[in-house]
Length: 224
Figure 1 (cartoon, helix red, strand yellow):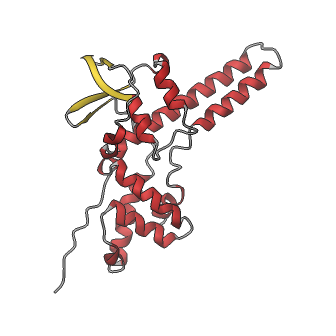
Figure 2 (cartoon, helix red, strand yellow; figure 1 turned 120 degrees about the vertical axis):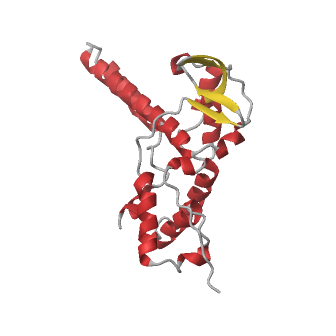
Figure 3 (cartoon, helix red, strand yellow; figure 1 turned 135 degrees about the vertical axis):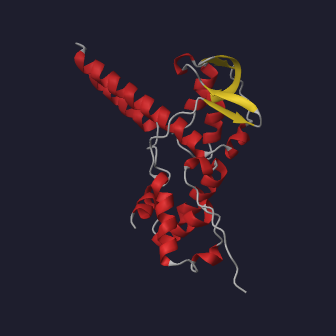
């Protein structure tokens, strides 16, 4: 008897939660140089396609699924989601990073890099906090308390996570550019400019490249 298999192909990062994304990343580490295994893992994890059905796919279906996934996995234009709802509670992104509390800043900067890995939920738990007051586009969030209840962010879709990551990356890049430009325009003592430039370089190192989590599989999906 022939069994029919329904494949649900995600069409955006909104269809993939962080838990599934991290599971995929952990398995991909073992197959970085294996093109066939890498694409197979993408199809298995993102489309919930059982391994035993992979070889039964037609070439056309295989390439179609690759194309559908590749159409959004290369997207780095995801906007910051200021408001998200988790379990009926509305959360807001830190409205003023420049006035972030010392405790929040300290807990974020204890990580060597800011990237989407197992530590990312802890960073999200600092940046997104329950809304305290909201009037139109203006809002405030509850004060930061160092409590590890970050597991809830595992079920949040990836467009929220990448939106926050890209926002931080672009903010840091703009800040770095402005700092270096200012240091070149100002008449500074000779020993100060190299210090500022080194500081800028270290700032860049704080964040990993936005798409660094899938360096090889992205190009594989685009080659059809």
